[in-house]
Length: 438
Image 1: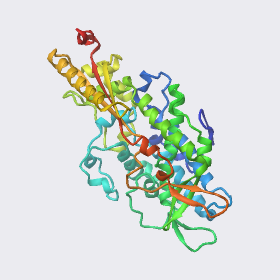
Image 2 (image 1 turned 90 degrees about the horizontal axis):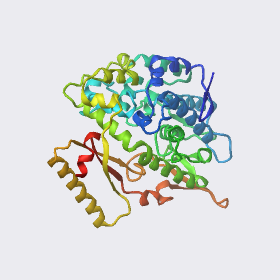
Image 3 (image 1 turned 120 degrees about the vertical axis):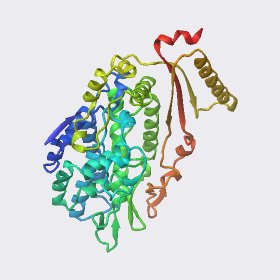
């Protein structure tokens, strides 16, 4: 079976994957907008998590097949190992967003505590005292719902279970068997391939980011998220180090990687953190915090499958809460002023911004003008300086053996863009806007 896609053209679906895609758990993603409230700023950005998930699976497959394509200097695996690794990577990419709530990240305000989600005990976060995230719901759905049986059936011919799919999404899961281990052709050494396969699903060079950047920028009608995906994917390979296999970028793709990083950084600043999208998110958060809010996200996965964007909008339309009315009637608070940090300004001007911000808030309080203060924070990368699986850059000079260097030692972008960028905005009701200048 093939699905036509605006980004990838043709996406092939294998017969074992079709029951999962046809299930209510996955079909629900058709009704979950990829960019939440962004359509209020970018009217064509109405695409959904369903097609993004299929696109991520396609991208993960392209990455996997490029890494293991027959070529001198490439890692060679047995056909059975290639088949099982490829199959589990495809399902992990397909299901990585299965737990998203209505309007994607927007409704994480309303998620229950992790303890109420009753996660399987095999997950290290099962007993954590914090609010659940969509990743927690994803793991719950993969490991403890009607979807689990479908994953087990799809994995049976290839020797993997639902826990192996989850293990490529959640790095803290401990796997007791040797499913991710294999020997290279011509070698007796057993290599752990889980780090590499995890990096295809979640890393600085993962399939998820490669798909959503291209897809979101296309539908938003902007160019910020565009990058040379074909060249970047074609530059990916693998490297074994200490009995483990890691994602590797050939040096010819280093500039494409830098462009990829900057594209994502600018998409956050210009699209994902657009001032109108941000204020709708904040107003929904204000509603969820209201005493009369009755909207809850169920912890039962069968009931959770019934919760999507339309259900949330219907709930808001039936509410008399003033925040719900503003969202439904498209009457958002209006931005009064915004302040940026982390940009090349002198120390004195940064202090002046902070002083002005404080003065404006004092004036608003004195005039009894209700306002919202919202801060959005972005950073180029969380990779540098944090523990995790390393990414290597492979240098070939044709006169000696390849040299493998950590990626953070091959580019100065992590240093140049090391400081987080924050945008703090003050919003007031449109009917109060003119009062702010008297």
